[in-house]
Length: 227
Image (tube, rainbow, N blue to C red; front, side, top):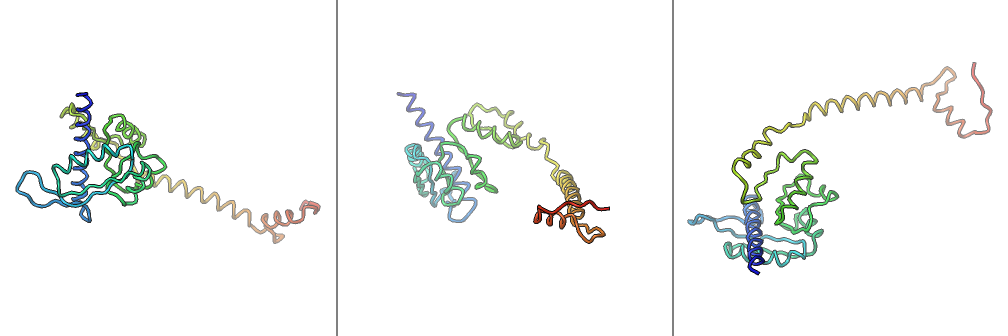
């Protein structure tokens, strides 16, 4: 029983930290999101409203996390409406909510909805984070991941991860584009040669295109061989 209680407290603490991160991020972007006000204390007081939706399975977890966050930031109103993981991701992509709860990572079919956007991914379980990391590794972006999800992470490991993006081989975009452009140019020339040959008019004032069309319209015609 005591172990389960510790797990619940830890879960609430993780969610509270996550909401605090979201509040800080939203506050720095301006708009209708929570903003920070000056305070003589070491931690600035926040105000505003955060709206969320998503997994109904997480409702109890979200309510506990919101309650814990409200105990330290009473000026912020946090709402979580449930509705399902799919609805949460859709609402987040369209800007209806500030955060979403999902029982799975963003499916490949929905990644286009988040193109050009910054997504803060928070998970209680390391396995879920590993799934995201593997997907980023598949598209050569794992060097830009910073793993600090464990209180056992060592300083040297974090520093090495920070060095990784600087040492990563940046794709030669310009050179690749040039090569692709030249290849497309050659393909265009070959296609144009085919079109020119098809429509070239011979001394009989007919082209292969016209002759082929006439034969298709007159299948019973007798073929004649030219001189």
